[in-house]
Length: 343
Image (tube, rainbow, N blue to C red):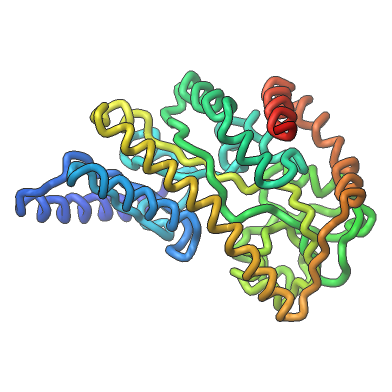
């Protein structure tokens, strides 16, 4: 990490220590202070979830726990830096997307494969099932210093959004310049569907759409209206090709040092966090759709046959994944999806 961010983090830590000292001077200093680092703003569901955890834990712990939430990169300025702070026990809690998880657990990209989940109910069933404990155990056994607490949602589902024409079949994507993140899996997925992947930072997407650097993107409708992309994007296809999972991590060093009698309260706090981060994107989706349509945008909800065509076109991604990472986690995921779909 660079010197400026290190100094910023040190400043935050010392400021927090000063405030805790003030509390201590009043005779009611908490036994444990939990620091949560969030890259998003206070308008995001990540903050709402963290706030739910804070409210639950502090109300149940009888003054023994205080929770401090640092938003907008105040504690750490990027995902890699935040993960390093978790591993070092400097930060207690941080969230990664499935894509971010793949940066330190490459096989985890299985959860980013297109159309692997068919709706919220199946996705939530899978992510609450045995696979959650499997992921927790595997990351701990690799000595990563990270304990997976829960998996929520951050933004809903990724969909295709375009400037000039609607997307009702994979053929409609042919030749289009579609914005992706730098993740190789996302780029391969766009390429498999016949489009041209164009990695661009999300902060630069508005200008890229305005100038024709890209002709479309793959984001949730909430992200589209949140960044005013509807000023350029006129068509959204709700193909739900990727569930935007939010993996909430606790520093394992800090967890092992946490008082055993307080751990159940903290685990219940993460359950409250999960509930909020899953519910809020669903609530916000409807208002985002209405805003997009009010601005003249067109929404297409694929039929079952159309969705099957997208799934078939993206099928080569499974072979790509297996060749790079093996089939162990993909088999686990497929079995969990099949089990949940039967319920």
